[in-house]
Image: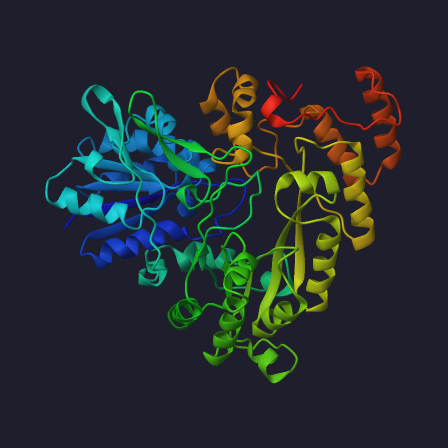
Length: 522
């Protein structure tokens, strides 16, 4: 039996804390199930500063301080592990999540305070670490799915940990360890639909792991997608990520029965009225199950009394309605009018669509399988089903050009919307990062850690991967798009062509195949 302190690092500091960290909540539940003593300090929820962190770290003789998260939490993680090592010099510090998995050797080098890193999925690896600690065994290289320090600080990477395929064997997340009433429920509102805006007690669920799509900007959950273990010339293991043409995907999902039982548990215990599905793509799972999975979830949602009562009764919504509204992700080519209607009947309020662009050439190169036609079709299908479609877009793709910008503006006019695009960002673990890493490092003076520290939610430019535009041009062009100012976009294209000696009538692009590219962003 070990004493474990989980620390949830700060993320998206520009916004209020909205999401209970699902991975930590699951690992905490697993550790408690196995008889370990568990506490959680949710630094992202409380945001009380270094003093509170030091008090928590010094409050007990912790055997383990465990933390993890996405790459954008790296700055907070770096601060936390430094303080943890200072306050708890003998405690084993364990780091996991996408931040470690995407760059295991780099992270262990940048964070000398970390004793052992968990690469990939932690459902089996973390319990083994705790059991070995309880037995006084710190031979981390013997634990699959880890990276640790050997003699002289040399890093040792163990063989890959196999994935957990029986997801229903997982316990329910330990939501009770987090400040639900004080922080998360007051920040339940999701400003994407009327039902989401009125949510007062929201929790999130991860019903599946993995995605069948390529999406070159996406990091597909490490060893469930893009990552492979390889043996170097020195005999040491390392990881590498997909480059164009070599892809692997592993698709796993909870049974509909587990999903609905978990939702019912949250409804009964925490009195929730909204659930956000965190899945990469709900429609991928539905397609992978031969169109059974989502239909069964909707049927069981109703049978277990979770369908909003006014939808069940066909009446107007009043303040006294019962049940749970929910939201998630969808895909333009995988949704159907029939399943969308069933989802709405069960309480789905909005679906996020990664449309990314309405340019045929951009979409073809993304590997997402969608077209401008399927993007537009899915938008209206979703509206007709009574669900609000939430379109996401990106600007600054490698092949972004003036025509692709106009294509998106034309689609906005047809749909009656305006979308403020995110900036194309090569997050570690994505194909874009693997292809453009040399350029990314050059843009940050050869310091990759500086790039990682600057990463956020893609609302600012951290590295340019566009072959045609620099950062200033992308910022300006996005503003002109939002103002619907085609005249100035046309004016600038003439200036741009003249400076690059590209005659009118020729394609407005300098794009070349990534495999032949040395430096981009200029």
